[in-house]
Image (cartoon, rainbow, N blue to C red; front, side, top):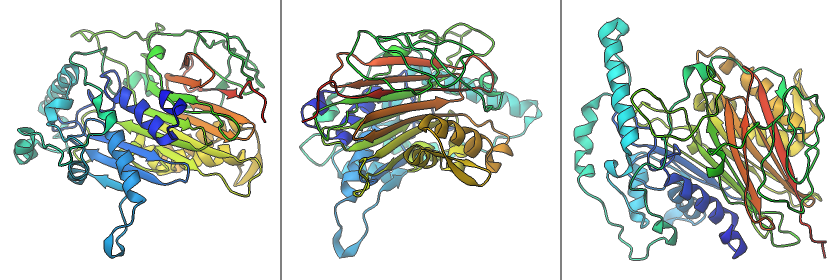
Length: 481
């Protein structure tokens, strides 16, 4: 928020927000991320600006803050190269580390990004895989350990950036000890039910009340630290009954409709899961030999700056024990992050950004972020091969149930389709914030420049196969001039 209030643009705010979370072990992004089969951190990240231009990195090792490098790729993609060459907007693997070194970003050893808990999980998973193979489960087809010798020389040294000037955002220190439990994969019990078509809708306990257009079969509440002079829309949300400690760590930057006044809106999402065998709220705690970690946090952020420009970004360490070189949805524009720019002829001055987390391969099959952004932008949903007008939250519900869960590629897959979507629609009337998920839980935070503290919510699903939705409408309390 400080960046936005001091005239920074939306991409800078998104970068800083995600950087803060990448440096925390409790998220599956940057430091402390899940390890691949070789025991290394490989991260994906994307940045998309208000014009729809993007910069992304995939399966990138040795990078402390992937979102920073994605932002640099975005900036570089706007500058022409000699001899009419086309600058890249997606760089993967070792090429990402080389690009980082060339542009003054520190390239660090593998061990610098590995937390103690991530290493313990990897060791346990390797033992489990060996036991399965020994018991007749067959050899695993993932990457073998032979490539370790090829990368040993890289681990032994840190390449120093050639430029003396250091990115001012690079001063954030890496935690020296675990802050809390690290991110891991969703437990199998949490994702064994396909999402249905009936959403849960919610009451909010705050200074304002969200209306709902549906019957309430369960009650959830929004926790807000103090009252604000905001107008809230009639959105039909579905939130969690408690404000758990996990939700308090979801703080991200963004900004409010700035076409008339300097505003800031902060929005962030993290995808978490809880054990369906227990009704207890997942609590942050250190891992023990008897207790597992049920947090899986892919980070996403959306910002709108003082000029009314929107931007989105996402960052992830991917799934645990993945193949070396596996490129996840956080690196793919239209899959993990999407922006629909403002049309100059549009009198409503609307633009939309979405960030999505979930089963990455299914998200790629359905182009999840792009589909969600389009449905929110046009306020329509697909019905029997055609489109019909509806509200934005109905459009988001229809997209998940019809175009994701019931997509042939997802429906006939052996893997369950998990998804969580965060969307922001900016117009001259204000900023509309929507989210929906079919996972056990979804942590969201939002803030604009007229609020003193972020509004944090832990949205939870209490029924198998359900869809939870929610949102808010933010407008300035000051009259337009």
